[in-house]
Amino acid sequence: MRHSSVRGEGAPAQPGEISGGGSGESGAVPPPRGGSGGGVPKRRGRRRVLRWVSSILSFLILATAAGGYLYYRHLNGSIRTDVLNLGENKLGGSKPNAFGQTPLNILLIGSDARDDAANQALGGAKDTFGGPPLADVQMLLHLSADRSNMSVVSMPRDTMLMMPKCTEPGGKVHQASKGLVQTNESLSRGGPGCTVAAWSELTRIPIDHFMMIDFKGVVTMADAIGGVPVCVQQNVESRTRDGKGSGLKLPAGTSTIQGEQALQWLRTRYGFEDGTDLGRTHAQHMYMNSMAREFRKNAKLSNPVKLNSLAQAAIKAMVVDPGLNKIDKLYDLSMELKKVPTGRITMTTMPWVYSTREEGRVEPKPVEAEALFRMVREDIALDGKGSGTPNPDGTPASPAAPSSSTAPAAPSQPAADPAAPPAKIAVSVRNATGGKDGAQVRVKGRADEVAAILVGKGFTKAQSTQQTGAEDTTVVRFSSPGQAGDAAAVATALGLPATAVEKSDEVTGIVLFVGKDWRGGNAPTPPPPAPTKAPDSARPLNGDDDKECMAVQPGFTW
Image 1 (cartoon, rainbow, N blue to C red):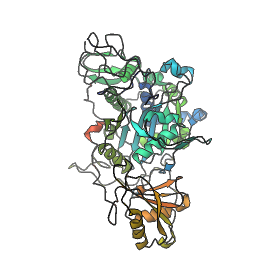
Image 2: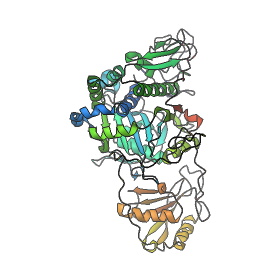
Image 3: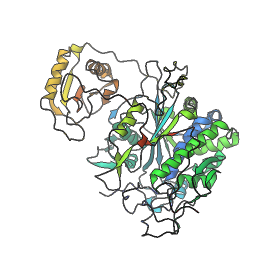
Image 4: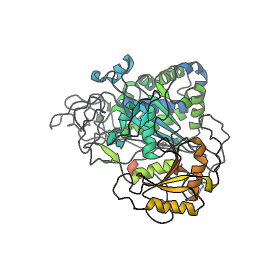
């Protein structure tokens, strides 16, 4: 398979590393500066890390410099918008918890678009000018319902996924993929709404908003910060013997970096840990956590001139969904984000394994990736501290009282659609017990058996159908908003969670897909208890951890 989703890529990544180099850096781990070894593969696209920097940096600016945005209402006309979700299976917005509090899930997308002079100057790779953009950075930010904690989940850009069907507003259809596709190609399948759809399909997490950033404004924002402390375990210089690398040169211990040096830190892969994108991602997480602490500790952005320059750079480089298309909406969102102390921010990377189907690429790690997604779906803090302030004995506190905030950023929920009596609800039942991976044969006659269970519960119009499906978990899908209450009633009768109810344009009426979790018996197999802390494979990093120090790759010291 030819992977067109890597800018300037000469060859797939090799085992032991993840592709996606910075400026002048190849996909494989090179020989160290002055060392011996074979030649270096062709360089990958330049400064790919800028997408990551742009998205997180801009978002933290919105989160911590909120007051300044009261001055920038005139920037409304500069905010660009795009459709939130172009997929068929729309989960809707996040649902309130028992206390009426609503979590927020925001997908941060870094585009490598080289569609104007500014982006081309920053991005390099002239052969890609005007080509389709790639979503080379994808991070899901989860703000807990009680605003006590925040989680960030990054997805490696070389992750291979099944792409959903995406339909552009003008009617152009991108059919669902028949095989694995690299996740960063989602952006070229109609825009950020297809990246959102791909995340929704994979994680089953309802996504409320997205923010997409390109190259522009990154350097300006880096200079405006005023310096961020970082740490390395040894003297480090990111330079290979043939002159490639970010050029970062720091002494062992803690240094305060800004401007070009901050950009070098964020671009460095050669010299950190094992010389792959994983080490670079870890360094980026450390930088962003440190920057958040600096924002909280100092009034570095209280200067209105700096704020104005910073805001204009960020907003002009940003595309958002219609729910965030005004400065006051961004301001309200930032006020919600400010409620979370840095000690309750957890940065993670989706657990992954090398793909056995696509050489040099990765796939979500079975069990552990789903465990991380489930924690976000169920609003479980990744740091293991639960909601609210922990009790003195270290046990989680009771959920916080409902917030008085009425910020528009937390979408208001429509009134519940009332359900008809069970005997009046028509339900089609499909056998999907083989699962999405097709590893198991569908249980013969299972749709008939489950239809009979529904009839026994009063849903006398339930009927099995010859149509089948492939689902890992049992799900109820409905086609029109007026059927939402009826679909929820079916799920409740079967003991299914609210997340098992989905609106879909792929069905007519209400359809129950009997998944791999219900191959026998009168009820689906209940899921195992939810985890209480992010798995170690996600490399969780706490926002208050100011002792973290980057390991240096052998051969890159001075």
